[in-house]
Image (cartoon, rainbow, N blue to C red):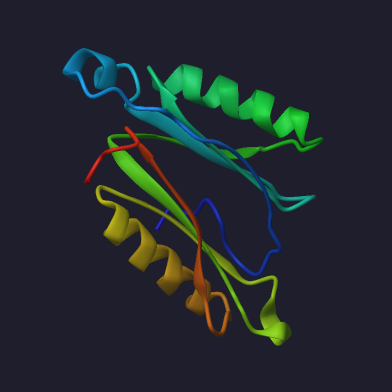
Length: 138
């Protein structure tokens, strides 16, 4: 769970910037950070990965949110982790979602599904998963 980043039922508009990871250790070292953010008014969720440090990840997230016309006041940088977003499939709770950051892709996805269900979602499924670096647990 992303330490209180998202709570309650919300709808999602998603803007993402995916990363490219290098196969060489030095290339991977420069892509180990990411960020995820939420605009609580518009309910926009943005992801940024493939960044060299937390400050740059948060700065790029702000640009991503601005480009979507969103103000992501709730933001979380992550390092050597994956962030996953799950959304409800049921028509009665299409605004339920879950967001989770963990050390592996599978753990992030499991956490996002659990958070989506906790927030009232039925038939929750993974919408997106981003890791920094991109090949974190491949």
